[in-house]
Amino acid sequence: MAFLAFVLFLILAAVVLGFLGVLLKGLFYLLIIGVVVFAATLLLSGLRWSRRSHRHFVR
Image (cartoon, helix red, strand yellow):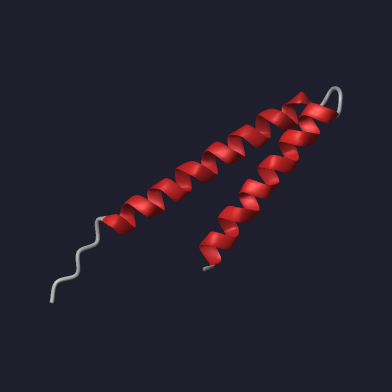
């Protein structure tokens, strides 16, 4: 449950950084940072999801 909250927080931070990077002149680097944070969040979520799908419980 804590991982999901962390992922949602990272997505929210990426969106806020992206908006600030677009709206404020001279702060285009914030948009780039927001895109990098969003991509890292997707990668992190994908890795965790793929690790979970390979678990097979033996009875």
